[in-house]
Image 1 (spheres, rainbow, N blue to C red):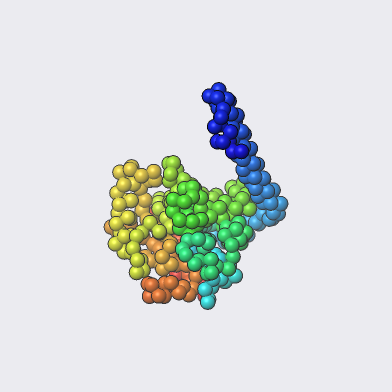
Image 2 (cartoon, rainbow, N blue to C red):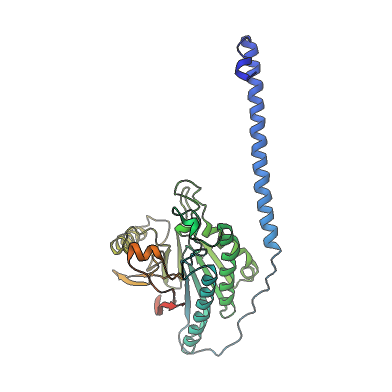
Length: 355
C-alpha cells in the first residue's frame, strides 16, 4: 500500500500525523544524502591533498652568479598560451605538446642569455593565457579528437608541464612571477550548466602552484590567478604590473568574430575597456597594453597608443581552421623584454618557432 492509499480511510488527525511522519522520514533521507555527499567531497579533497603532499620535488637551485652587464635592468616576459593539451591531430598530440613547451623554455633561456650581454635580466614574468587543456565537451564530437581524459590533462600531465617550465625559469632567474588566466577550453560543458568558478585551466594552475609551494614559500616565485571577484564573475582577466608597464591579460575569447582575428571586435573591446578602466568603472586599473591568446596567431598592433599583442599556439595542423578559416600558423609562442623603469617593451620575439 502506498502512502497516498493509506490516507484514504484515515481521519484528519491521523492524516496529519502520517504526513508529519512521512515528512520527517524524507527529511532524514535528504539529510543522510547530503551528509554522504559531504563525506565524499571531503574524502576526495583529502585524497588530493595527501597525494600532492607525497610528491617530493627538490627545490630549484638558485641561478649561478654571472657577470653583471652595465645596461639598464630589464625583465623577461615568457608567454604560454593555447597548449591545448590532449588534442590529437595528424601532427599534434600530448607528447608533442610537452616537447614543444620544453623547446620554448630552452629558447627563452638562450635568448635571455644573449640579452644579458647588454642588460641585467634577473627577473622573469610568465603569462599563462588559457586553453592549457583541450577539454572533453567543448563541441560535439570532441571526444574522438583527444588522446587523454580531462583528469589527465588538468590534474596530471598539465600541471607537470607547467611546473617544469616554471622550474626551468627559476634555474636561471632570481625571481619568477606567474600570471594565469582561464580559457574557454577549460569549460566542463556548455555555458550556464556549471558553477562560474569551474574551469579546468584554473584547476591545472592550482595543482602546478601546489607542486611549487616550496618555491613560493622561499619568496623566489609568486603566482597570481584570475580569481572570480564579484558574485557570478568567472575571473576572466589578470593585471600584470612590471614597473611602470601595466598590461591587461585576457584569454581572447572575449573578442567576437570569425574568419581569423576579429580586428573590429578587438578594437571595440580594447578601447571600451581602456575608457572604462580610466574612468574607474572596472575592478582593474587603467592599463597600457593588452595581451591575449585564443586565436592561435601572433599579432602585434597599436590602437591609439595601446599595445595589442596576441600569441600563437604550440598546436600545428588544425583541420577545423583549415576548412572553416582557411588559415593556420606554425606552432609558436612569444617572448619579450621590458624596461620596468620606463614602462616600455624594449625587444620582442612574436614568434618563437617550436617545430
